[in-house]
Length: 105
Image 1 (cartoon, one colour):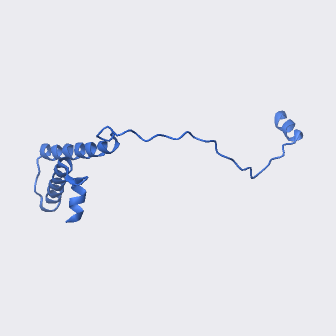
Image 2 (cartoon, one colour; image 1 turned 90 degrees about the vertical axis):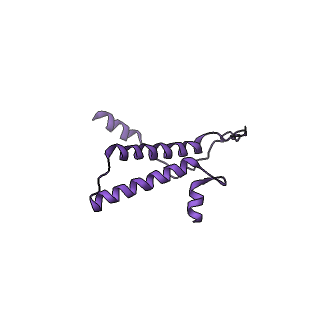
Image 3 (cartoon, one colour; image 1 turned 60 degrees about the vertical axis):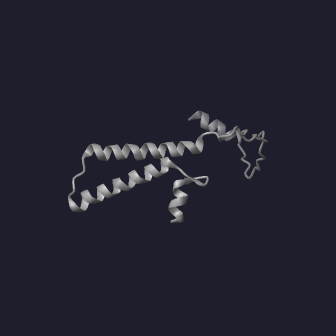
């Protein structure tokens, strides 16, 4: 029971978008299973409507995670990047003779 409460809640309160999306997904799964095993026909318009509700609900819920926080909090200050240090592990010896052979080809 705690799993469903955590899944449907956002910061301690139940999210209506998540609740509606979960219920529509549950109805879709029931309809799909009934059609698959018991030849119960589901109207295609009804099934597609449930699909759109689930897709939109998941999209809006995911978009909330990328939106700026409410309450006017300042975004975190980014640090200025510092140059990285590269360690040379191999040194190549290019002879002039090899370059001349490549040019002749």
